[in-house]
Length: 225
Image 1 (tube, rainbow, N blue to C red):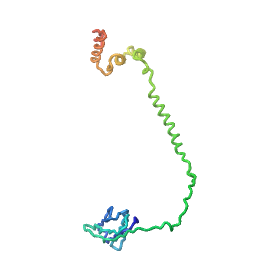
Image 2 (cartoon, rainbow, N blue to C red; image 1 turned 45 degrees about the vertical axis):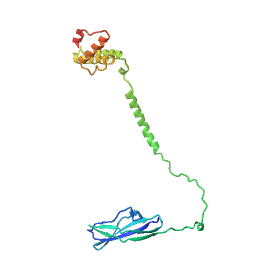
Image 3 (cartoon, rainbow, N blue to C red; image 1 turned 90 degrees about the vertical axis):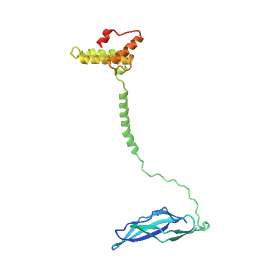
Image 4 (cartoon, rainbow, N blue to C red; image 1 turned 30 degrees about the horizontal axis):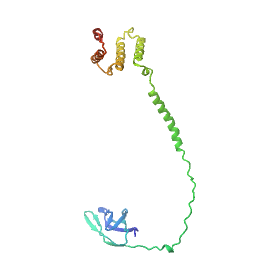
């Protein structure tokens, strides 16, 4: 009961014949536990194909393997039906020689110590240090980034004055930098979109803010912008 029974099917064919053996989970009430590869025996110009299945049943009784359909080219051929008898086997444990359970024993671990983790550690430590330094360098603020808006404006104006761009007749560069400094200051203190606003938009916002504070922009200042 539960033992594997080998079921074999033999088909004679030629080298041009198409033979397809059945592949099923069960043959009748017998369970297919293994489908073995097809063996081929060549006899002159003929072939003999041999297919084996491992079948079993877990309950005692008489079971028939039904006729199995094998496809040969476009025709079907059928195997014979076979009776399989499954019987229980009585085991008399009283007649079997019994042995005491052996005590557990410690088996020393003879495997060599794996030091590969140490190489990974030596590799990752410098890499981690490099990543830390690069991150710190990125997070470290420049001198200008530490200044308050007013102090930053004075610092950039002094740097602009040191370049002496007007004396070098580089007025376009001078006014471009000056405009950026003024817009940056206004952006941080008055209107948060000064850098991306047009001159007209910026003047409109400045007028609104200054009216709210009781101030105004003179026509001379407005014309000069």
